[in-house]
Image 1: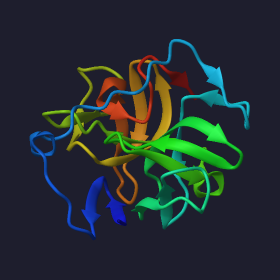
Image 2: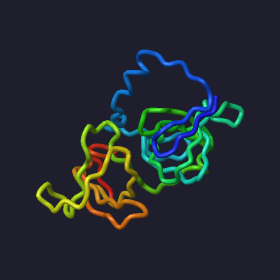
Image 3: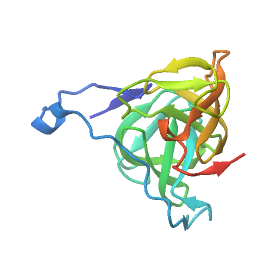
Length: 184
């Protein structure tokens, strides 16, 4: 079965059987615990860590080789993915809805992006400054793709690609930056 992932929504090209659990919808996905960082056995970089999709068309496979079947085909460059393991040139990744599989490292970029947390029940507030009293710029729906600038552990500087909107959003409203993570 081959499925396509674009902007967080999937379209399967094969008949799937719905179960009661599938009808209930996915549970909110939270990032893996980051209290103790491991290093990747291939890259030496922290595991887990966030990256983004570099390719315009990227296959997520069931295992770390082209001999494994394709689980999904992602068609949106910039989507954030979480690397949770490494094997040779392959990276085991997880997306914002919890789907895991393997992608070749050439398909991934270290550029940090995020999506407004898919588990939110309300819109996230994009503000002009890093405080709740700062002027409201926009309300962003869950799943909106953002470029990350920096994060303070509480707020992140973001911009909306292909729009002129930029500002600050609470880090807890994002999937693509760990709770409490700080970077420039």
